[in-house]
Length: 146
Image 1 (tube, helix red, strand yellow):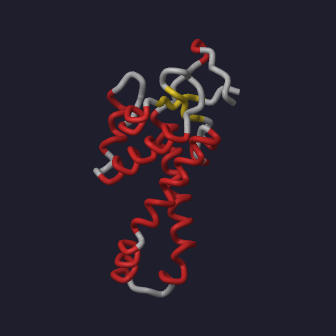
Image 2 (cartoon, helix red, strand yellow; image 1 turned 120 degrees about the vertical axis):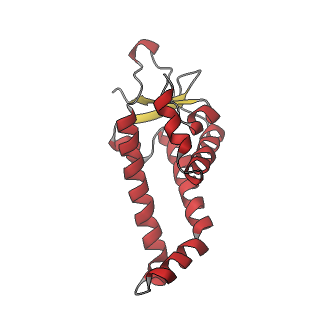
């Protein structure tokens, strides 16, 4: 869907729908991490499990980066966003975003997660409901109409 949206039909996604999409995506990423690390995690004590997760932190971050980059670029939304019927568009053109913008957005998202999710809270204080990663990549999250 590369056509330009009618600006009059544009409605911003609510913070609630964005939060629910975040939860869905994080649960999915947790499930994938467990599947990938299952052989290492099965039957170990908590201390060993934490050490294994720390050892594989970069792999987990890379998987999240690839997931968010490719889904937002190709579909305009992650699985969580699709479930909540919201999507990401370019702030200026109202079209789907490029692969580069999607990658920049994903990097900003990882940075926000590393710094106690502060980048996400920005959405509560801006009229456009943009998070740090939205501002960084010049994107908007809208209700998916149609």
